[in-house]
Length: 181
Image (cartoon, rainbow, N blue to C red; front, side):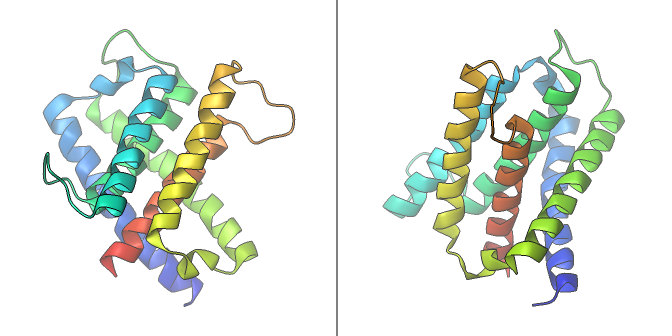
């Protein structure tokens, strides 16, 4: 695969995620602005745990949210987490849908650029991986993020919370690509 294919596939996956984000903005506005970053982390954890449960059990008994839907939710909550880190949480919805979309695009663009740099260095190793490995890596990144959050955001040698969110987003996008191509 060439970098051009990766960019195209990544952009297709992002477009799918952004459409869901935009539809939810229409329904709820930016109600997520009240969430503290730790709560967003826990919401991502719920989605990743559910994906792992579906991968392990092979069936859902509660609703029809698929593994693909779960990865889309992780991407969108990951971007929300990056926005919350940048802006802080609010007492109410304090941004318009247009501003929320602009922030989504800004953070997704930065996350895609990170993916391209890592993809260059790792030679598209993600293509050789199983989708279940993306789930496990997201869960590991969540455990790291929770540890950093529990230490007040202080790290001595590790990447910060923002880098972990970006990695979770990118692993989820890889899952979306694998499930849709």
